[in-house]
Length: 118
Length: 118
DNA sequence: TTTATTGCTATAAAAATTATAGTAGCAAAA
DNA sequence: TTTTGCTACTATAATTTTTATAGCAATAAA
Image (cartoon, rainbow over all chains, first blue to last red; front, side, top):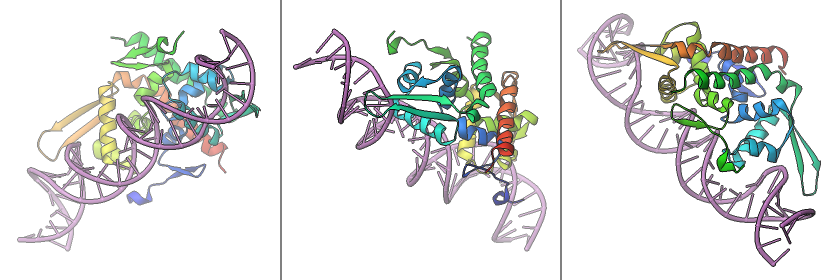
C-alpha cells in the first residue's frame, strides 16, 4: 500500500491518520484541555477563565475557545449585548463525553508530581 | 492574589499553571500521543513509525521522538553503529503509566466516528 | 478625573510544524 | 554496472501556531 493510499479518518471536514490524532485534533491545543478541565467543574465567564489561566495570552485563549466552540465541545452564551458584557462558557453534552479523559489527564499530572518529583 | 503569585507546578525544569497543563506539556505535541499509541502495542523502528504515520514530516517525527525521550517516556536503542542502522523505540516504565490515557484518547476517537459522524 | 472592569481584537515577534531536498553506507534490480 | 532503494536521520526555508504587547468602547467605582 502506498503512502497516498493510507486510510484517512474524516470528521468535521478534517482528516486524521488515526483515531488518536482525531482526538488530539480536538483537544490537543496547548491550552484546550486546561480550558475543558476548568469547565468540567462549572460554567465560567471569560474573565474567570482568564484568572484560572494567568499564563495564557488573551489572544490564544480567545482562539482556543473559538476552536472548541466550532468543534461543538463548548457553548458560548452572551447575556448582555451592551457593556458590561457577560459571556459564559460551558461544556456541551458532546463535550461532557470527554470528562473521563480530561480527568485522567489532570490526575496523571498530580500522580507525576507526587511520584516522580526530583 | 496577584497574577504573578499564581502557584506554579514544577517538573523537569519546566513550570505549569495546573496539573492538566503539566500532562499536556509532555504529551500535547501534535503527534506525541500518536507515537505513544503505536508504541503501546510494540517496540517499533524509526521506519516502522514513519509508515504508521505517513502524514508527519521526518523532522517533526525526529523532534517529537527526542522530546519524548528527554521527558523519559520512551527509550531509544541503537543496534548497529554502522549502516544499515537499526534504531528501536519503546515505552519506558514511566511512559507505560500513560497507557490508560492514551487508550482512552484513541477510544474516544473511535467513539466519535461511530456516534457523531455526519 | 483617573482608574478599573467587561470581552475581546490588532499588530508584530517567537516558536512549532511542514515542505523539500540531501547525507552515507550498503544491497538488490535492471 | 548504473540505477534505485533502504537506513535513520539533518539542513534550509516556508508556513502555521502561540506569545507579547498594546488597544478598544462602554460602564462604574474611587
